[in-house]
Image (cartoon, rainbow, N blue to C red; front, side, top):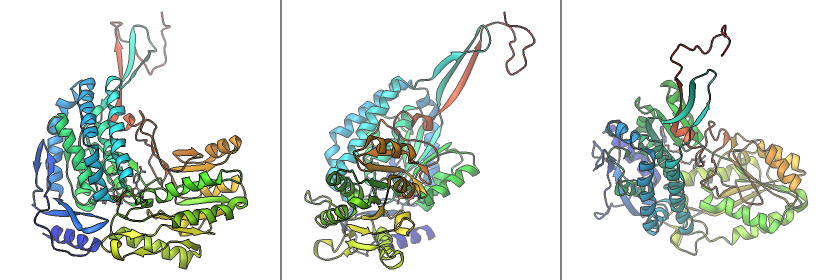
Length: 522
Ligand code: NAD
């Protein structure tokens, strides 16, 4: 009961009170192949950030009771799934890919409605789940291990991948189908069973993915979904002793909590966290191209991407030209409901996000002393009245050590910092606690490679923006962005499988390794 009150209080802090509609659908958790309500019967509402009167659905407000049931189901299904040959597991996943393709339009519309991003970006999110599914399912016929010579005669040595076991997956709201797929599909192809806890702001897109898994024929208990808030359902996943691996994507602050809990119980922990990404624009850059990249990187998904171009470091020789054009083009962006094809920039996710972003705009203007060149206001009139809309905002003449240049704002705000040289630009670019994505615009190949070599980030672009990863390359970052793992690519298999080294001695006698040899080999 105390928990339900807390949930209600949190709901109220996110949006104004309104009369719930009788027709709103109530969704369920997916546990052991059954669609079931939370054990408490409590629910929370999923609302449209462009129009908070639009209640999309009610989802189970789960607690540790529901997580325990989901983990039990995952435990019960584990032996069957890990012993299903990987190519057979992959066949089911290819069927999942077909279902995702068939329903792409509906999933896209659902995502824009619950998350706010414009339809073309939501379509890209669903497409990424499709691409991830096909690419990773292909690993079912590979999952390569290796053989290697043994030290001794008549002895064979090899190494194979084994599933980790039961996996807990915790995901954010900004890529509500792509990120769950980045975790679920490799977990499944490797033979693990799983419990996923999607972000409370976007449970519908993960529900769509899980429903498609059911339709594809993934056996009961292999995939389980429990919805709810981070501090109870998320924490119950993180702390469950039977979950061998926690794969988390979200903020650095919550990632640290997850990492500490995993360290306590010796669970494997894979973290994808925040970013403060940079575009460097050199004096020889194609400025118009750089402007396009900056607009796309800073304001795509309303700046709510971990790879968002939230800093732009510009050479003084092209600074004035760049800033004038950037501001002019930013003013021309149309803010609105992502479902309207004319919209360039949709709403931000919820009222907490509005307050956080507006707080940073105040800090930039009043405390940091950067120049607010355009934007800076919350939009509240007419079509904006029921949504979480903020003007695309550009700060200029900023210094590298200002808070707006250092901290992740996660909204439609970017900060332009002047520089004198490539060396200075790289120093500024590396001078943050995060290390996800960086980009350089230059026509000079030596500069491009120098920056590529010196930037301490997981992703680097030349003459392209900081956003737009492809699923067959590893994705992740350094420093406070990650803990050394990479999702996507074949590298993700190293998260969701463990190596087993196998020695077969067919000599028929005792042969001793790890000891000084006194006998000479024959
Ligand atoms: P968040 O950290 O608030 O939440 C992420 C998930 O963690 C949610 O499902 C939430 O319910 C859960 N959670 C919250 N508190 C928890 C707790 N105490 N224990 C367990 N789980 C808990 O992040 P968000 O607001 O959903 O997402 C935005 C953040 O995610 C940004 O910092 C962004 O940079 C980051 N992000 C990173 C990547 C990447 O790949 N590096 C990708 C997307 C988003």
